[in-house]
Structures are given as C-alpha cells and as structure tokens.
Image (cartoon, rainbow, N blue to C red; front, side):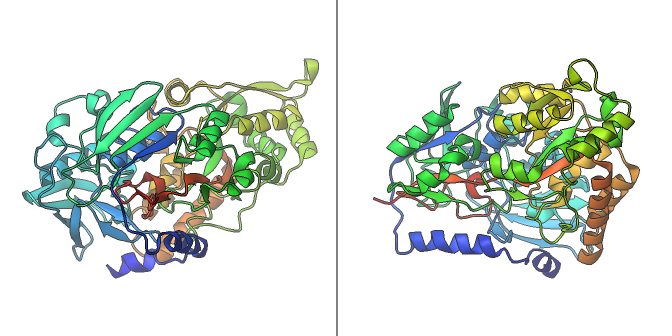
Length: 530
C-alpha cells in the first residue's frame, strides 16, 4: 500500500485547520441519543440512491441509508465500512476485501459478497462515472459470503478512493437483480445497510429517515430521525435556520451568500466553510460543440474573453470561491497545472474576433442568439452574469430556468442548449471526476453529467486513458498536465473553479461531517449537544 500512501499524502493545511477547529468544539462532549434533525436540501432530487445518477441530492441523502465498502478521512485515506480490511495483489490486478459480518439489510436479509459483486458490476454499467471508474474491472469473485475479489484487466490507481457510498453504493442484489435498474422502485424507496431506514417521501415536501435500531455499529446512530425538507425559496430557508426550525443546510439548500456574514454573528448558528476533499467542488461553463457557431474555437475564445471571472468571483460568489482556469482545480493540487490562467478579459478584442469569424452585429446590434441553461446547483445569478457579459459583445443569450430533473433532460437527453453552466465536481481523482467530462467515449445521449460539450480530441482520449492505468505518480502527473494544456487551448469549456462551500448548522449539532465525504457521509455520528 506504499504507493497509495505516497499518492494521497499531499497536505491540505486549510482543511486540517478547519477540522481541528470542529474537533475542538466537540472536545469532551459525549454523544447523546435522541432528537430529529431538520435538514434543508435543494433542489429536489430525482431519486435517493446515487446508483444511476451523481446528482447532489441523491449523493447527499443516499449514504444515510446505503453504504459503501469504505469511508475516508480528510486526507482521503481509506477507512473500514462494509469492508473491514483489504489487500492488493503484487501485479495490481486484484483487490481482495474482507467484508463485515453480521450486517443486515433493512428488510432483514443478510448482506453478503454477492451484493458487492452485483453492485460493482452494475455501477460499471449504469453509473454516470462508473464506466470510467470501473472500466478495468472484468470480474468480481466471491470465494465465500464474506470475501469479494475485484479482478482488473489493467491497474487502476484510483480504485481504492472510489468506494464510498456517495460514489459507489452497495445495493441489495435480491431487490435489483433482473429489474430495469434505472426505473427500479428502490432507487426512491431504498433498502440499505446504513444507520437510517427510509420511511416516506412526500413529493415536494419532505423525506423521513428513521433510526436503524439494528445497525451494525452500535450504539450509533444517535438521532431518532432525519427529516429532509425541500424548501426552494432561499429567504424561507434563511428564516428557518435563523429561527431554529431547521438545523442544517448546505450549498444551494442553504442561505444566500449575501447572508453569510450576518449569520456568522447569530448566537445559535455555526458556519462551516470546509470543502469536502472527496467532492472536489468545481463549476464550469460548457459549450455545446454541436452548435454550428460554437464549433469555431475563435468564437469560444471570444466568449471566454467577454466573461470577467474576477468580477464573477466578487459579485456572484461574494469572494468565497476559489478561481481556477484549469479543468483540474486547485483542490487536486498534485495534478493541478497552476500555469493555466483565464483568458484575459477583453471585450473589445472579443468583438474583433467575432467580426473576423463572420458574426458581425446585425439589426439591433445582435450577432447571434444562444440558449443558456444552468444546473440548479448553480445560482440563477451566475447565468444572468453570463447573459449580461455576452450581451455586451452582441450575443443575445436567453437564460432558460428549469427544475433539476427537467434540466438534466434538456441538457443530456434533448441537448437543447448552446451554453450550460454546470456543477461537475472534480471529485477525488481526475480519472473519476474530470475524465467523464472530456473523454469522447463518455458522450452518450441521456447519460447525465457526462461529456456535455460533445468534445472529441483523440490525443486527450489517449492522455486520459493512459493516466487511468499509470501507477507511476510522476508520469501520471505529467499526463494530466499535458491534458490540461490541450483542453485550455481547445476551449470546450470555461472553467470557473471551486464554488463556495458554506454549511449552516445549529450550534447543538455535533459530528455531522467527521469523514472526508463531509455532508455526503452517513450522519451515523451526528448527535445533539444541549
């Protein structure tokens, strides 16, 4: 495991410092049983289990019910969960997992290695990132009920980081086998092994999870109930958090960035700005390269020059984000190319380039019309910022707003957009979080959060595919550096960087995010301190 330790030992000073602060707050406190957590989530997810989607709501709610083989600390070191130990063969082509004994599914059936084998092979087929994450998996052997052996055709240096519930949930084979996985009813009424049991989902209102009294990790969980409330109005969310009617909220389910400083001064509230290293927050703007006008790189460059990313950071993100012009953001520091900078803000030069490309201003000063979508995990203000920026250079950018499910259909099935503002996180490794976006083989109609641009570059494919199996860390870094340079020149996207990570929680909430998955962890450790 030496190569693993070396590859994952990059210091994250700010994260470590923040973890220390929250550890200090919990020092000396004894976990207590009881209470119901009121948790605000927005937008409403399409389902609950993150099996066929990587959407934020699914990836946050699901891990309270279903579990992964492993969990991770804030340095992304693996920790036992459904697997108690693991080992790798000398040739790097087999990972053997010893599974936890005595674990029951919420319906009373035994958890076994057959569930692991079924889940891993299913994830490879139906998960938006699974085709890349598990590309080298050829089999999962089950020599006995508590041993699972993942067999690879080629080494996979990322595999041990991919096994959290938020990324690779283990689901019950007996409820999924032989069904249409995408439409299986248990995606929205899940049966898991986790600390909380699904009780009900009232559409548009709430989801209720109840304490699993038979959870294998006793005396956890400490809460009696988790109530997930869907409150689309930001002002209403802020009021609920301020009054104590809600206990926890994050990101688009939380408060407006303009309210952060005011909330810092409230006596009953804490603000947590830790960024999940497992999630790797990142936001970007994608061009639809099937749109004729956008097939010209000089047009895409002109649009990039028309968007002042520094002003975006100050006005849209209120200065809380971390700008990065590279598709591999600063959060993955071991692979990030810091030499890549945003295209200089220069509207005059952008207009000249558009003239030269044949898009002169016409009647009313308009050069072209473009449809702009945005993932609801980005704010409408971000889309409006882009609209206003493009309007100054004669591009009529019409912003279209949809609920999350409709957005996914519009962007990834109908492809009814010219520009979309996305929130495709870098995650814990570029092969998982970044390759899916720029790998031509990951373009598939109807596959959410994949290659939205329909970007095709054979050299980029080669670099990504080689990096996915390269175990030499120095060589792997260079492959990713070369990849970033090409993508920056081709401009299939405008990379914005890490969006603000603001979690608002009542002061009574303790240990809500002890693992590197942060809010996408299990809540098994969460308790209320009087």
